[in-house]
Structure formats: C-alpha cells, structure tokens
Length: 297
Length: 96
Ligand SMILES: Cc1ncc(C[n+]2csc(CCOP(=O)(O)OP(=O)(O)O)c2C)c(N)n1
Ligand code: SF4
Ligand code: SF4
Ligand code: SF4
Ligand SMILES: [Mg+2]
Image (cartoon, rainbow over the protein chains, first blue to last red):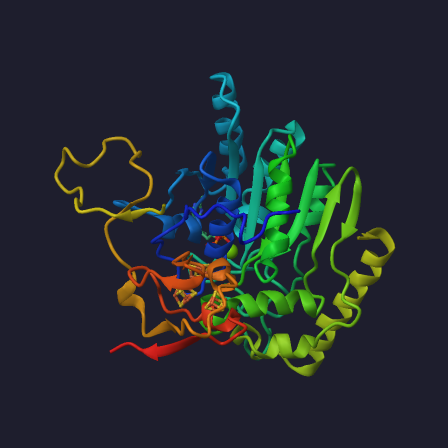
C-alpha cells in the first residue's frame, strides 16, 4: 500500500508561509515534506518558494532548510549529501525544490552534473510555467501561447512562440535511476512518487505541475482543479522512468477539452481558434510518440 | 506539531544572528489578515474524508474527532478546501 492521507505524517513542515492564496507550488512543497519527514534537508534556490518561506524572523520550514544560489540547487544538494555522509550520518534525505526557471534554464548544468555523479539526492521541480517571483517572465517551460511580460500578446505576437521543453525526458536521457512527472491535481500519485523516490539510492528527479493562480490568471480556488484538468486534457501526463524504460501511469481514453482548459486562464485569453488548433496538434503528436515509446502501467 | 507563533520577535543587535542560520519553524506573524472570505465547516455534513486537509496549500486543516478543523491564524481564504470537499461541507463567508 502506498502512502495516503491517513498514513501521512501529521506534522506540517511548511507553515505560515507567504505564498499567494491558492499557490500550487506551496502545496507541492508542503506535501513532499510531509512524505519525507523531519529528517529531510530542503534546498531552495531563488524563486517563489524560498521568497515566501524565509523572511527572517518568519521562518516557515519546520525541518532544516537552506537557500541556494539560483543556479546551484543541485550542487548544494550534493554538498549537503557529501557533508553529512563524511560525518557518518545516513538517515536523511537531501531534497531540492526549484522552479521551472531554476531547473530547466539556469540550474540545468548543476542538475546534469549531479545526475552524472549519481549523487544520492531528490530534486523536485515545481513547475508553474514562468519566472513567477520576479513578475511572470517566460522560461523554457512556459507553454506555447502563454502571455508573460517577456512574451506579450499584441497584434504581431500572440504570447510565447516556443513549445515547452520536456525536462522529464531530459533528466531521463541521463539514464537517471528514477524520474517521474506529477501534478498537484493528482496528489496521491505525487505522494506515492515522492515516497518511492526516497527509497531509491542515487539521483531522483520529480517534475510536478504546480499552477500559479497569480501568473495563470485563474481564481485561487481553482488551482487544484486546473492541475487535474491539464492531465485530463492531455497537455501534461503522469509518467515514470525507471530501469531504463518509460511508463505512462495514466492514459486517458478520451481527452477532456483543450479549449476549455485554455479558455479559463487569463494568460491564454488572446489565443484564437487557430492557436488552439496548434496546441491540440502538438498534444496529439506527443501522445503518438508516448504510445510508441512508453509502456502502459 | 507545526511551526508556531513565538512571543519574542528578535530585534536587537544581539538577538539577530550574525550568520544566516536560525531556529527552524519560527513564526512571528499570522496570515489571517490576507483573507477576504473565510471557510466555515458544517460539522454535521463533514464526513472526515481528509480531502481538504490534503489539498490545503497552507496546511491549516487538521482532522479532529473525525471532523475538519481550521487554524484561522494562517488560513488565507483561497477556497481550495471548498472546491475539493465532495459532500459540500465547507461554505465561504465574507470576512467582516
Ligand atoms: C542569478 C540570479 N538571477 C536572477 C535572480 C532573480 N530571480 C529571483 S527569483 C527569479 C524567478 C524564479 O523563477 P522560477 O525558478 O520559475 O521560480 P518561481 O519564482 O516561478 O517559483 C529570478 C529571475 C536571482 N535571484 N539570481
Ligand atoms: S506568484 Fe504564483 S508561484 Fe509565486 S507564490 Fe504566488 S501563486 Fe505561488
Ligand atoms: S473535505 Fe469536506 S467532508 Fe472531507 S474532511 Fe474536509 S470538510 Fe469534511
Ligand atoms: S481557504 Fe485555503 S488556506 Fe483556508 S483552509 Fe481552505 S484551503 Fe486552506
Ligand atoms: Mg516558475
């Protein structure tokens, strides 16, 4: 039996934080720490989760936690792991929580190095699909069409022109011991993956979609629902990479409407039917590849 | 256990650490002032399913004697608990 609400640690390790009401990233951090428990040592680079968690003297982590440089989440995790190991301490889990910008752009080199050394760390990317803490700039995980301050929507350009990078497959391409995707809309699946990762020695990477009501233009009570819908409409998927192979955890027989998913978000308000068709086509192309190369579970 | 409000707010020079390290879970301010609406639990309808507890981004819900209970000092009124409560035991009321 994998972990559930009843067996989960009742302690709160991320409390009194200053994230916006309904913040998906804060839910991901909170739940992951409840799975990992008090012997986890959290590393957080610049980004919303460090900004809302450490405002001396308001210190919202109940476990050991530290801020890293923006690019250095993975290298600091390596340092935590190596330092404790050198002291003969073994009952801990070094866990990183970095944003999409901190992972797929600026922290990618350090992450790649840690995976290459197979350091015993857990790296969690909470993906809110832009640089939120500095006021919504595009990252390489911002999806096609999304309006950000650096990909504005106007007459000539309608939001972000680029497709979202596939960080999960990039991590897997290192032949990492364990990589997974998740969504805060499927919290039990996320908990099970964090628990599984904590039992594997070597580098683990979990990529969790964590909507940001502020940056996405959705109401604060819709965060969980929209994180579920992005999976149901096929624009995000729940999968794992282990022992050299990919498996899909959830294969919707029929996708829910991409248009409905798009239309309920302020960041996509400007998109026309043609733009939505581009999004649907790229979804279908991705699922064709998934059906060929991922095994069903 | 959770990080909790302390009486002492470090403010003088010798109370402020010279290195960037301090006690974990040290809280000095509440978040209740952020709230425009307040979730209210109808205990008669609550079945103790823990869904609200699981999904609250602020971790302010606990289940006590089979019923959900909210720490209003740190609830921000986001309304996620109401959205995920299947029996409809949570309603949002305007803060006065
Ligand atoms: C080297 C460096 N460059 C830029 C910044 C400014 N900065 C702080 S947080 C942030 C955005 C982080 O975005 P992301 O990693 O996606 O996390 P989010 O804020 O969305 O949670 C930026 C650009 C910084 N702190 N350090
Ligand atoms: S801006 Fe978005 S990611 Fe940052 S704290 Fe607010 S809701 Fe969370
Ligand atoms: S989700 Fe609703 S029914 Fe379930 S514990 Fe919370 S208030 Fe009670
Ligand atoms: S309104 Fe939001 S912060 Fe308050 S209890 Fe509900 S989910 Fe938690
Ligand atoms: Mg981000």
